[in-house]
Amino acid sequence: MKKIVYGLFFGDSITYGEYDGVFGGWVDILKRYALQKFHEGNGDELILFNLGIGGETTEGLLKRMPVELAARNSADGNLVFISYGANDLAIKDGVYSVEPDKFKENIKIAVQHAKQFSKDIYLVSILPIAQKIDGIVVGSGKLRTNEEVIVYNQILKDIAVENSLSYIDFYNAVLDDKEILLSADGVHPNEKGYGIMAEIAIPIIEKYL
Image (cartoon, rainbow, N blue to C red; front, side, top):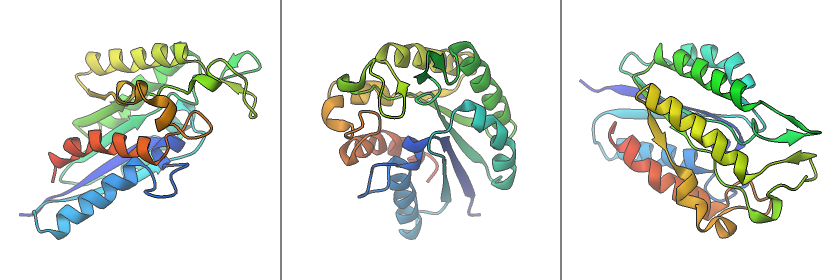
């Protein structure tokens, strides 16, 4: 009997696919790939939901996550992707959007929410930022550093290990070529960057197709 599995991608503008006018971002590439596989008649169907919201932090995630999970709950199983940190670690007027300890607490709570609906939970790394904005206050008044990216990614890695979850390491995949894989703002990937992210993620979703 055919199974229908849902994949829920929680995240910010990088999950949403901002700055990619060609492919719509890495999650939308995965959506098209899963749909193509289904139309090829490979049996089970994997329906992916892009639940990325631009500018969102883990504080916003916790407000909506229980409702989003309940609204998209397949009896055949769910995959949950949690992709946060780029906004949490931003500093404005000397204050973190979400401090590291609070970020850790929020991710742990999000994982507990996800565990009520899924055994397949993925924590997604934060991308490096371009050198030109590392430690620089940008037009929005926000400051980000690659040093903080490493700190917040370590929190994600530790939680993944503690909970036996998978950790998707986009950070190292982009790091060496970040200056050509990030868009002009130095934070979001460009089409090539999103493409590399999708290439890494396709084998993950293929297990469910």
